Length: 173
Image (cartoon, rainbow, N blue to C red; front, top):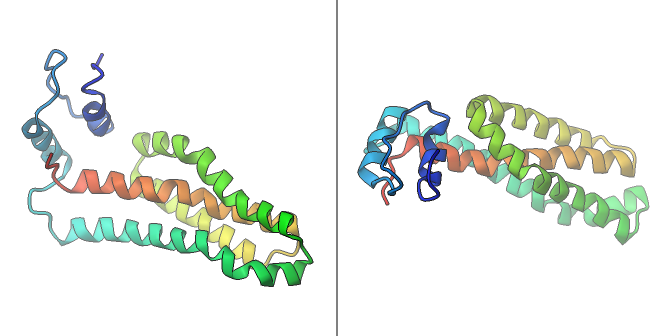
């Protein structure tokens, strides 16, 4: 069992299968963490591949950020097209946030357990399905459902960016 001080260090490397030295309750040094990170793939001088991996994941986060905020621009169009009042519009807008908040903890657990690449690709496919479904929706219920799906990926995109940055770049604290 790991002590409370080592919990963060243990969580970072638990999924990689690396055996961390037992420091008998003392925090691990940054040198030990850097050596362990180098065994996972983190580099002191990261190459172009590391930057491309983290940049591509951050583009997904940027896309999700735009998608979260575009609803304000569509507010008047949706009101006119579907004859909705402010309460109905706010309900549809909240479905993305409900999806995001309810999936943050499970997303973190899933990203720790499974391949980040596969999880990120599945989340991206779900977001694309949600976006296209939202574009072709014909009722308030389908708008809310597909916006919920689009918000599903938001829970995964930020966490995956942080996880990829931790895995691909050397720790310096």
